[in-house]
Image 1 (cartoon, rainbow, N blue to C red):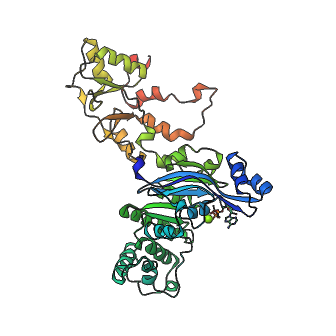
Image 2 (cartoon, protein in one colour; image 1 turned 90 degrees about the vertical axis):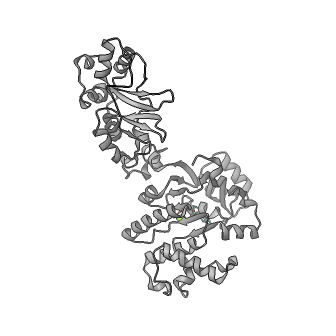
Length: 431
Ligand SMILES: Nc1ncnc2c1ncn2[C@@H]1O[C@H](COP(=O)(O)OP(=O)(O)OP(=O)(O)O)[C@@H](O)[C@H]1O
Ligand SMILES: [Mg+2]
């Protein structure tokens, strides 16, 4: 996702002013100078809809925009295809600055690259489901037969097969929503823009639609930008979430970053209800400085290192940091007593491994089933980090307030590690 080439849509300092005063340049300068939305509205008579919004959306990404009512979400998503004309900034779609396009060029982009689903699906009441789904394809010059095929395919994908000849009024809200989605999908868009598409639905249908949509997005390899008020929806569907306030993007982050590391109180208030643990993965829990040694290293220095770090297992890695095994304190200490070196043989165990994106609930059984730390490895077996039982507990205890003044109030996780990993040694605990 970090691949620059894969950027499908980019917003560069896009602003939208609702400005009747003809003082656009003055307002843009005020924005650059950091004058607030309310002050601009009061003193310059201009509503700032969107304020220097910058972000990149990658191919295949699900990008969510959240924010309070009036924060500029709808304005921003509409400016992306110039349904609302941006006042300033650039919008690059597939390498092309669409703010420079003629009306005709813009129509082509809307027809061929982007589809939009609105909250009130904009269905035509006198047309059937099938006709609604194929709406817009005719103007693209697609033959009747192909239109039917595309529309039927989209109807099947959203689970409305059998309803083709009905009118929207015969359908429930959730089903009408699917027709809106089918219409968007029938265009095979590169980018799907959705403005609160599920908000008109009752909670159960909404969850169902969200889940189905999540599945569709994966299957179709769509790039989606979704505006929503619904935190669960944002966290469930979003690869990244942008939080807006007063027309400005305050933070762009993955769901887990947003929940565990909100940029300010406003963002924190948005994610208040979400449990950070829900988003934790091995990467967010692990220590990226695992204890390692090589075949042939002195056992004495490995013992030193373990004492220093108070970690009672050492991973044996090769020159490329590939994990070859894990050794316990007892084994290494025995070797040290006889002045030996570490070697890949007796006493070297196969470590339990996981990858960096393993979700926290899958980590528990792994961590509990071994007396050694779990090795976090990439697909070539290269060691990236390690996870001990206490690292897991500490991550979950993230929200517990310790009395900073009183070090005793913070549990000594390192010392208790010795106990839980069942490798007590009087000598060790007294170190
Ligand atoms: N046509 C318009 N003329 C003047 N001001 C407008 C216009 N459209 C939007 N605004 C203003 O722009 C700001 C952003 O509105 P927008 O509709 O984008 O908010 P939103 O985040 O989508 O809110 P909601 O969650 O209620 O849909 C608001 O202050 C709004 O009053
Ligand atoms: Mg809106």
